[in-house]
Amino acid sequence: MADVTLKQVRKVYSNGFEAVKGFDLSIGDGEFIVLVGPSGCGKSTTLRMVAGLEDVSSGEIAIGGRVVNDVHPKDRDIAMVFQNYALYPHMTVYNNMAFALKLRGMAKGEIDRRVRAAAATLGIEGLLDRKPKALSGGQRQRVAVGRAIVREPKCFLFDEPLSNLDAKLRVTTRAELKALHLRLRTTTIYVTHDQEEAMTLGDRIVVMSNGLIQQAGPPLEVYHKPANRFVAAFVGMPPMNFFEGTIERRGEGFAFVSSAPDGTGRPAVLGFPGSRAGRVSGLVGRGVVLGVRPQMFREVSGEASGSEGSGATMTMPVRVTEPLGDTVDVFCGTAAQGHVVARVGAKTRARAGETIVLSVDMGEAHVFEPGEFGRNLTA
Image (cartoon, rainbow, N blue to C red; front, side):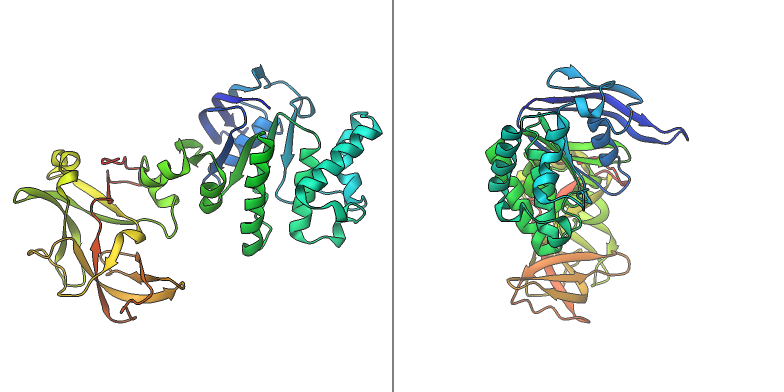
């Protein structure tokens, strides 16, 4: 095992496109790091630079304290698992797993020990004599992981390894990957566009956009304290809702007043609890964006919201509902408010074409600067 350090790593292609911009990250020995972000954010390019499959335009990559910028991929002591598995179709599972060790000239006895030990770890002992065409997608993925394990590398690199699996199999396979990491404790860098995958697997997640790290930290810290609006929108499902407005002083307290009217035709007035006063008092009169996760809404009965003493509630026309068993996602919002999702209890009275009154947990709501990457002002 080894630590991995990236210092001001950049990747600029010959056409001038800068895919990765000053990437700085220190990965501890045995840590599981997940790079997550939308397509084109630079996460796979970063992984490929660590693997040596892409040249580094500038900056420094070190594995186990050794700078590897000019080291050939095969000499970096890493093992990579690709999205498409990259198994040799004419070889059995055993030979697929043993191939890299044979190229190293390793003794047959040691090869056999490693292959069978990895197969036992992954539960594929009964598949060693099969060829890839006789395996399911999940079994092929395990073989690809096994081929990496047998090398006993300093670092595992995973490039969206579960994206070809169906939804149910992705859930079970990612649980197996996490359990495997807990047993092996090998330093791991994992790339995915799936934020749920990132949240469940990583010791830390690194959220990327436009070639830059937007935030890095433990999954729950990133979820509860997003650094900016982009991170808040990307991490969490369903995504966070955003409302433009201003912070105003109301009596002895403070409230968010929306710019767009809700279903009553009036701006919603959402009062902050006293515990948040210190964080929002300096924002009075300032144009801001309120961030509310779908889980922060609660359906209430009573009159519609408005600007006159309605408390922290909003009234919105319902477009459609999606039952999820113990909860229901209510898609609502006016044309001025835009798309809003509220996750409420299964016994909701919400119906398409009607209105719903929702209270907002303003103790958990976030306030951002305007703009796609607006800074979180209350984190």
